[in-house]
Structure formats: structure tokens, C-alpha cells
Image (cartoon, rainbow, N blue to C red; front, side, top):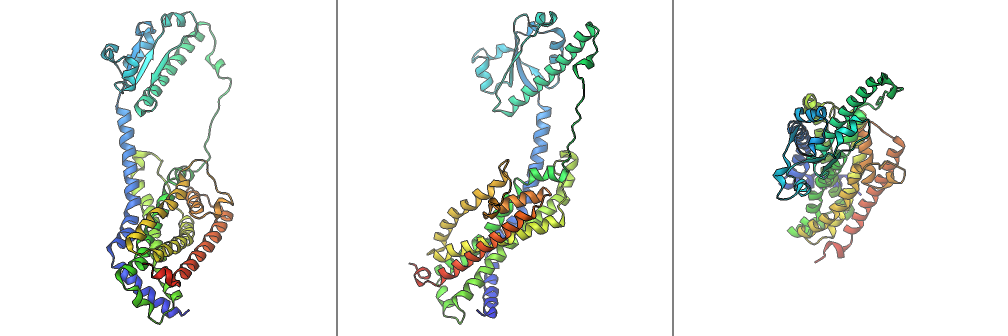
Length: 404
């Protein structure tokens, strides 16, 4: 194999590839814009949702309100986060059905003689009904529980004072809880669930269109035969085209990583005052280097598989159909970073896409387990080499090249 021939083929193909608008969109525009837009959108949505939830009063209905202790009734009346609605508004459908329909958020059922039970020192019971499938219903329930807990504490203190008992008897000791996890790990655990998925998908999309065009596109345009009569060997053609696909996929991945670093460093910090410390995170140079390192052989696998599919296809459209199905084989393993409780093992570190997804998640969280990283690099590198070898063998078969 002559290196000069491979370089010539690479230069020719990369020039043609960069002239294709679709390739530029998937290789440059989407990787650069996707992550910043996503993080900005998530941040703004989070802020608006939190503000909206805090400002919106929960609509509640109280049955048997006359049996409430006066102090508790006053607390409910004075609470700004509740709007007490008359039950007569829902006579047409019934209270429970109206609750399911979302016409109000929570139903408080007070039993007969509830205040008298409390006055006698006995235990009473209040029922709260809500639709927990709705966020507003869950919020209303939480607010009611908090208010009732506050009243119960007040009532207990009053009872203890009545019997001249120190309230400290209820809490023999205090428990101080301290979270030793650094903010990098806390935030990375949240962002690390989605970002590896995005970076892997960007890799695949960046390599997808060039791979389809460099083989299936050549067949459709009728230019493949012209290339095959040149002095270069079939292997040199495959390696040259493979390097183009590898380059576009790697560029897309690095641009995604660059946009992630930029977003975290310059865009997210401007939102920290509003979102708190949820998105305050620093990406160390070691983390960035590790991400680039683990992505390289993964893109090599994508390039080899996509080249094989493109060589086999009769036309650009047929290749797109195959790649659409292949896309699912990438999305599902990449989705593993979103699943809770899935941790790296030696077995998972040998599975392509899965290993990259989990390693990227750990790296963004600030944890690098080099034993698993080395296993993943070796595994992915071997598979990338096999994918390239298979593409070469596929390209050397006349029955595949000239499929009609």
C-alpha cells in the first residue's frame, strides 16, 4: 500500500466532501449549536418552571372544614400558596371526578369531630387526595403536608408545655448530615446523563453522510468505475475514504466537546445566580483529553461500519434506509448513560458505544477509572480495525461493488 496514493485519495475525497452542504450541516453546524442551545433551553425552562410553580397557588377543596381547629383553619386561610375553593362548584361532576379532570389540585377530607379529638389529646386523621400523575397535584400535596407538619409541631409543643415537659425530650440527639461529594460530581451526575448521549450521536451523524456519499453516492453518480481504473489499489481507496469519514466524525465529536466546554465555562456560569449551583461545573483538561481519546476509536468503528453499509448499497437512498436502521443500534446503547444505577464493569467496558457512554458520564462527573478506560480503548480499537478490514474485503468483491 502506497501512502502517497492514500493521501491523494484522502485529499480528493475530503475536498469533495466539504463542498456538500449536508455534510457541513451535520459535521459543523449541528455539533456547534446543539449542546449550547440544549443547555440554554434547559436552564431557561427550569427557571421558568420553578418561578411558575412558586407563584401559582394550589386550588384545594376542604370537606368538613367546620371540624378543623380554628388555628389550623386560619393557617390554611392565610397561606398565600393555597386558594380554597367551594365544593359546590363541582356539584355537576363530583369532587373526585373533578379532581381527576384537573379542575382543582387537592381534596382535604376532615372527619367529624376532628378538633374535639385533638382537644382530648387523641389522634385524628386527615385525608389528602390528589392526582400524583400531575405535577400540580403533587405540588399541592407537598404543600399541604408541610403546612400540616408545621401545625403538628406547634400542637405538640403546646401539649408538652401544658404538662410542663421540655420539648427537647422528643429529640434526644441531633443528626447533622454532610454531603462530601464535590459540586463537580453532583452536577456531572446530572449533566453526565444526557451529554454523552449527545456527543456519541454527533459522532455518528458527522460520519453518516460522508460515508453514504463516498460509496453509494459514487455508484449512483457513475463515477466509481472511473476511480477503479486508476493506479491505486482497492485497499488504498478504502483507507483513503475511511480516513475522510473518520475525520468528519471526529471533527463533529470535537466540535461537540468544544461547544460543551464553552457552554459550561461561559454560558452556564451566567445562569448560576438564577439556577443556583446546579450547573456550576468545571471541565478539567484531563477530562477533555479523555473524552477525545475515548471518542477516536469509537468514530473508527462508526466509519468502518458506515463504509461497509455504503459499499453494499445500490444507491444513496438505499444506503440511507440501512443507516436509519443502524442508527437505532447506536441510539439504544448510547442511552445507557441515562439509566440510573448502571456502572462500569469489565464486561460493559468491552461493549462499543456502551463503554464510551459510561466512561464519558464518569469523566464529566470528575471520576476517571483508568482500568476500564484502557479496556475500552483496546476493545474499540480492535473493533475499529476489524470494521476497516471488513470494508476493504467488501470493496474488493466485484459482486458487491457492482450490485444492480
